[in-house]
Structure formats: C-alpha cells, structure tokens
Amino acid sequence: MLALVSALTLIATQDAGQLRWIALLLVAALPAFFLPHHRIAAPLGRVAEVAITGLAAGSVAAAANVSGTVDAGFGAEAVLPYLAVPLLTAALRRRPTEGAALLGVAAVAMVIGGVIVQYSESIITQPGYLAAGGQWLVLGAIVTFAADTMRQLMAPAENKPQPYAEATRLLTQLRSVARSLPGATLDPGGISEHLLEELRVVAPGHRAAVLSASGGGRLVVLAQTGAERVDWEVTLDADSAIADAWASQQPQTASRSQARSHQGGEASSLVVPLVAGVRTIGLVILEADVPSAYPSAVIARVTEVTGPAALRLEAALLFDEVRSLATNEERQRLAREIHDGVAQELVMVGYGIDNAQATLPEGADETAEELRTLRGEVTRVITELRLSLFELRSEVDRNGGLAAAIAEYARTLGTSAGLRVHFTFDESTARLPAATEAELLRIAQEAITNARKHAGASNLWVTCTVDPPYAEIEVSDDGKGFADDRPDGRYGLAIMAERAERIRGRLEIRPRHPSGTTVAVVLGTSARRDSVRDSVSAPEGE
Image (cartoon, rainbow, N blue to C red; front, side, top):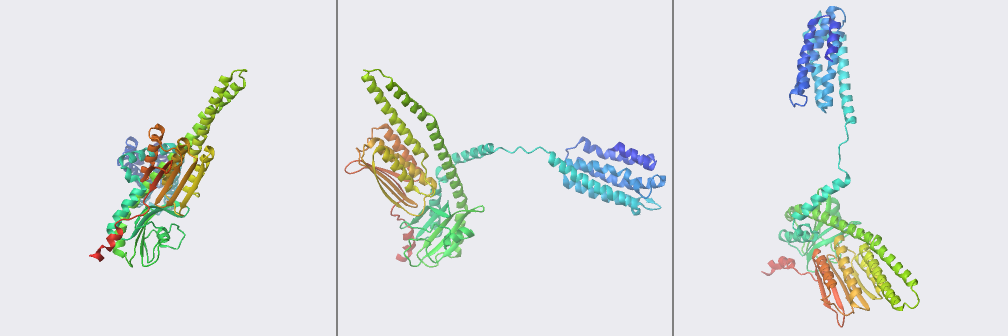
C-alpha cells in the first residue's frame, strides 16, 4: 500500500518532496508491524498512521494544484487510500470501537491539513478536496464494517461443550457439594423443620408450616408444627393468602386461618413466599389464634430469616429431584438388563428341560421326576424375576397417589401367591413430596414381598394413611412370624430401616396376634404436641 500511495503521490504532484509523508507513514506503521499484539504501541501506531494520512491529504492536494496535474483539491485522493490499512487492521483485531475512533481522527486531521495548507485560498474550501475526503471517510467506514462482518462470519465456531460433557461437569460439581455438606443440609424436610424452629423465636404462634410446589397447581407440606395435624389449603387457584403470596412473591396477611380444618374463631395468618432468584419455591405459613398477631415489625423479622433459607431449600429440592431421577433411571436400567438377560436365558433353560423330558426313553421314571422338579424350580425363579421386574418398574403415579401404587403392587403379588389382600386407605387430598412417596412405596413393597416369600400366610392386611406431613404404612400377615436367623430377612430389614431413616421416619416390626408379623413405617407423629401453644399462653399464666 505504501508503494501504491508513493506512486500516486509522485504522479499527482510531480514533487519528490511530498514523499516525506510516505516516510512518516512508514515510521508510524512500524509499531503495528513489529508489535501487533501490544496493548498500547499498536493502537497508537494506527492513530499516527491515520493522523499523518489526513495531514498529508492537504499537502498533496496543494502540490497537485501547483503542478497542474490534478486541480480543485482532488489530488488528496493520491494518499487517502492508505486509510484502509489501519482501519482494516483494527477491524480484524476485533476492535470496532477503535475503528470508529480512527475515522474521527482521520476527519479531524483532514480538516487541519486543509486549513493550514494555503494555495491561493484554503484547500479546505475547494470542492474536490471536500469530495475526496468525504468519499474516503465513507469508504473507510464501509471497509471497517465489512471487515468486522467477514471476521465474524469466517471465525470458527466456539467449542461449546457437548450436552454430555456439560452434564458430566455439573454432576461432578454436584458430587463434590454432596460430599462436602452434612446430610441434613440437603434434606428438604430437615431444612424446613429447622426454619420453623428459627421462626418460633421471632414470631411465636399456634401453627406453622412450610409448603413447596408439587406440580399441577398444588403444594405439598414439607414440615409443620402445631397442636394437631392441619389440613392446609394446598391449591394455588383458591381465593386465599397462600395463592396471593405465591403469585405476588410478597408476604400476605389475613384475618382468617389458611387451614381447611380450622374450627373458626379469631385467627391471624402470615404467608411468606420463599423466593430463590426469580422463582417462588415454597411458602411459610404462620398462624396465631389472636387478632393482629403479625405487625410490620414481625413481618420484617420473618423475612430476614426466610430469605437465606429459600436458597438452602432450593438446593435441597434440586438435589432431591436429581437423586430421585437417578434412582428411577437406575431401576429402569436394571429392569431392562434382567428382562433382556437372565430372564430370557432362564426361559431357554426351561425349554431345554421340556425337550429333555419329551425325549426320555420309557422306564426312566427317576430321571423324569428329577426333570419335573427342576422344571418347577426354574418356573418358580422365572416367576420371581417377573415380580422383581414389576417391583422395579412400579412408581407412584403423579395423578394416582401413594395408596393406588401400593394397592396395585399388593394386588398383583397377592394374586400370584394366592393371598387374600385386605386394604384400608385413608389418604388426604394433599400429597407428600415425590421423593418421600417413592421411599414409602419401596418400604411397602419390601414388606409385602417378605410376607409373600417367607410368611406362609393366607391373608395380607395393607393399611395406608397419608395426611402430610404425617404418613403411616402398615403391612400385616397371618403367617408363621418373622425368623431372625434368616439372612435375607435381616438384609430386607436393613434396607427398609435405611429407607425409613432417609425420610426421617421410623420402622416398627412387631408380632401380630394371634399369628403373623406387622411391619409399619411411620412418618411424623399422629398427635403433634410441642411448646408453641405453651409459649404463646405462658405470659397469661404468670
């Protein structure tokens, strides 16, 4: 470009002295050429190139007028093409702002160059000079824009992580967090109970609960305190402070109870949303059987406590959901592996035994009996595998509920074992958290399976009571009772105990009169008594 500009300058001016501007451009271009990535030298070099080009335009235009080769100031076009070099370089360096600044410097330099150079009259007033300057400024802007656009189009796509790579990274972080935090900090129920304990100090009352979303416009009770179980309003389309707080993400007060089971009388309610980021993940309900129990000062103290708790609860709910998804996926995978692997192989073994029986010679009675016994054992194992597959694939339906899932499983196993199954269900409209329902279903399945395999019973009684956050599942049989020396029985008990502990429940195993065994898992307490009511009424008795 310097050679081209040099030739054009000599042709237009016929004055070798004008090549001094070319020499200055060469010096100004050295920093950008030798230090292209330097944060200061390279940009300053480009500014110098543009400034020198603008000043040179006036001098070359005047010299061209003197020589008579090009008049009216059009001689500036001999040197102005060099503007493309610094502008193009800035665009390719991903510096569009610098390109715009260079255009401004070029315009100012051309004005100065046109003013300070005199030829009968100021060069700046000549139409050719103005036309040439404006033309190359526009061309420079087009070059800058086009170069930046081409750079973006031709730039290789960023190496974004693939979905599985991103999932691996996130799961690795999740594993690190899960290992570093105590178990209780990732338990939604435990966090909710701790939150209610904190709120009892700043806002004493008679009833309190923490609710979270469960899908379908309904809420589930994670924890509650009070003298007795409360049937809270758990629908978000009802006309209640609960629905208003969820929608507005602002605390709501009411002069009536938010519980369906409330018997009337004076009551004050405070519903505080638990907001993490922009999402409402749950609600805290506080109630007292006195009017105006929650003034603005109390509401402010409550929100100070619930703010940090919302983030902890969201982390626990997300971890619980991920754990449930992973568990369900693993159960489905195991079911597929068993069905496509050992189950099919056992069926082929059964067919082989049948063929062997069909080809036995006459008189081989002893061998035939052994084959019949073996065939019966293979059939029994295949039946057990099919029931295991059914157990692995059984889940709590989102619309059916826990009782329906337990009933389906008990009915299927009872039919296969010739058991008469008796059901007693008492399930409220409120739902337990999905992870809790899944654990209760697995405990019930293990208890029913033990009764079918080992009890030798004729009858099976299944009782399911769900009144969140309280739940009780009881499985009884009239068999021979539980044998402590049976290894698989001890293992099954250990599994049920672990599951019960995971959801903060308790496992009870006791003999049934006059025969048989009762296995029960209890979540919460049937009659909830704590010091909330006593703490409120204590001042009156002093």
